[in-house]
Length: 410
Image 1 (cartoon, rainbow, N blue to C red):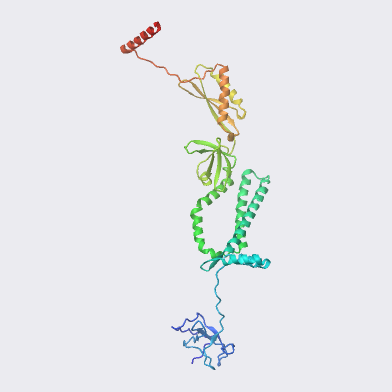
Image 2 (image 1 turned 120 degrees about the vertical axis):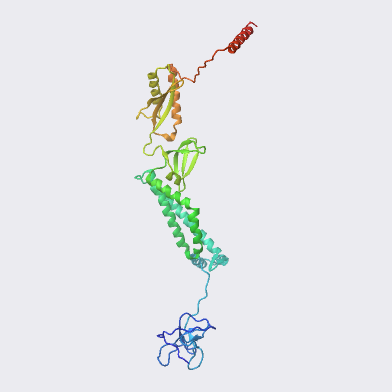
């Protein structure tokens, strides 16, 4: 019998086909007394390699079974029994809450135990009905807390007078993002979720973020950028194209997470994605100044006094309450038309969100009254027709004249 190697031995273990050896040699004990088994020559504890999953061990050099020199019995290893594997609990706090509830109330504890027994096993993970109920309660608590914190933060920001409206809106959005992100991690911590249990879902969630929510995150970032550079802000009047492709204008009411809300004068509300406003050309009527110039076309007869007509045009423009005195209204002679001399009255307003068509209408109505009082003619299209005479035409005219005379006598 070859003695077992001490701990200092570096001999390579020999594999046994009929057994499944352990990966490392283990210390041996006396099966009778439970004491460590020592080498009689060196006094060091013997080690061996497991030959089965029970108590049989091999000599690392020869591969033979190690036996007790006194009794001839196989040697035992001082290895602890392998623990039984139990299903992984994804929500650890649910188990702690279950024990706490059971200590407080036996009836409720029994109900919780029944819900905990209704479990769905997914591999090494076990999800019970109690886990779902507990997670739903924590989720509701976190959402309500985050909503309340967001409202309080918005109220605090709105009372901060040093910020303008755009800076307040940007601050509110950033605060909302921080609060909801913190709420997410607080909820994870309260539930004690083992994120490794959900590792199988991380790939699918990553794809959802990459494809399904790509535009959403793009619009969110675009909205923040628009507010930071103040190129578009609530209250601005911008020109947009409707479904028919015609250009119209509207006022920005709100810049949301996904889109900008724009309301036109006919109370049609357009929701335009933030990303579109950031990458496309935008006509902003109130970017650097809220003053907008309006053109009012006017045509007068060739027989009218042009200087008097221009004076009346300026008077009509100044009579409108929304027209600014500085810069003052001006008139331009635009062209000589087929039947009229065409002017354009240029006037300025500072409230384009209230509309421009109503200002033009008010100026034209006042100008009509002034032209009527001063005998200024507003022409309408006229055409001169020249008819060439010939024999057939003369006969036709004579026949018509004769018929008219006969009808007159009758």
